Length: 111
Length: 116
Image 1 (tube, each protein chain N blue to C red):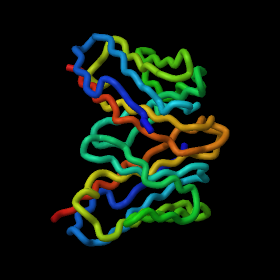
Image 2: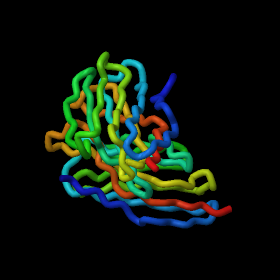
Image 3: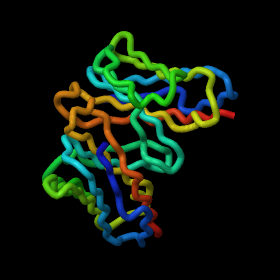
């Protein structure tokens, strides 16, 4: 099946710093979503981005489907950005629509 | 509007007990998914419903796991004779459309199951 790799696994930032999180996937995808899992476990949708670039406030994401990767940019990080960021994909090989998740990037933003 | 809700939020069971976990998807959403998230890992797919039809249960780890969505809305995940390895967070997600057209999946807060 499709493989999803995220890097780095852990990231520590000082408040105000910028960061880039990467997601590589091994096959063509129909769907790619970025999530933030907060300390209470809630998965919060950040972007639905199977291709192209989107921006939402301090966050933006780019997916280059032909090269099988996606990037999540966080600018001017805040302590509330702490948590785990997941990339999840749905393959286009006849799957039922279920998402395949990477192992996540654990972000800690220090004041 | 209301998001996906799950209950209970926390469940402690003794090994061997049966448990039932409930998911209320966003109203009108056709697709419903269950995922299992072990500590420190990403969620893993368990099963998928399109309306009341269970179209994929390939991720269910054993025949002790059973899911239903009888009226195409609320879903229940049942685990019989729970074992310690069943301890995890169980997440439910829903999306507006069926599998032929991909769409954003919205997740509930999860049920944290601890089996003693």
